[in-house]
Image 1 (tube, rainbow, N blue to C red):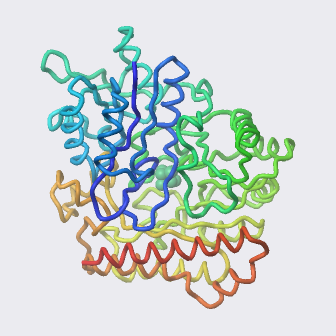
Image 2: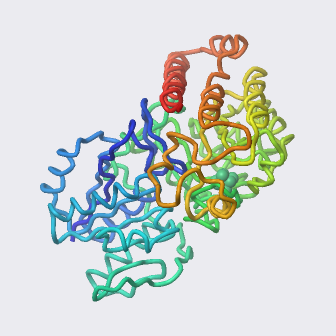
Length: 482
Ligand code: SF4
């Protein structure tokens, strides 16, 4: 039986950020994040004897015609596709087209949107199965074993039977991640993937946990997929790193767990990296309230070069409403601890909360500018707040009538324009502030510091790449202003 894990080409204003993306955008200067869980699924299926095709027509920038040629050439029995709110309707049309080309094929959808609203896709498309929850790997294997060997379906799967829509109940995240094989990098075309903050090639991604020990932020779409946290052991990640260094001479790794594990787990991992004497640059997502003066130096010693922190907003009222679990004062304190230890800081910031005024949004801009100017942050990314179905923020938005669009106008949730009404801002004001936050890099002190930090070719190439990325993002938001 042949299964194709597939990202078909999508139509929109740029290149879509779909696989492994907790938020969706169209980019004009794209880079692609390694879809870690679908890659794990491809590997698990192959190890279990299935014929697996990895097709990422988004990252490979295939045309529609090229994609259809792949379908005709490969003739898969089953196609599994990850989807997200802004492109769910496109995926319904794609399923229609796939079934015209391959009438016998079975199609599976997975992702946070269909986890929140599985029935919608069963009713509005010819999809055969929907996998809910984020364990695509375990559930895909179960589903294929069901089709091939009549294995009983696990909870979390929607299907059709005699013209009726049925499901096996609420998904359960009770699978042991340590039992998964390490991702087959050749099968899943690892060289396609890498964001612009990578510095030392060859680089790649890992994902040791699913997905975040905090898992409470009301806007976070992956809490829909992973309401509880599981992680592999530190030894398991160390062994995977071993393999990556030996097989691919990897010099830099970004672990894309929503928030990297902390506490004893982290100490054990750092000590393991030090003991194994890797010459490796590491990056991870972290939280301001998880970094402290005792762990930061150990992380630096282990090779952590950059940590990504969700700043989100400089307003305590907003952090509280988001259940972020951090204080405004944690932000500068956390940046300083990381920087004092010699670890770079990447901030993720959002504008366009439905309750924030223009002054609130400008306060966030001002904080970002100051942190960059004072050398307490090295890079940032700024996005417009989107409430995806399945998140508490979406529920609040519907209940409080914050949305400018009707539920169902999903294509409007693509960050091209804000989806909320604001107390005293127009959509264009929000896009401008988002754009201005990217320009916050451009203080003379920040630019001088970057130039003075150039030591070698890697530094120079990185600075050039980062500059290009900032310009690309500014153009993205300028194009989108109403
Ligand atoms: S800390 Fe990050 S990954 Fe965790 S719930 Fe909040 S936004 Fe999501």
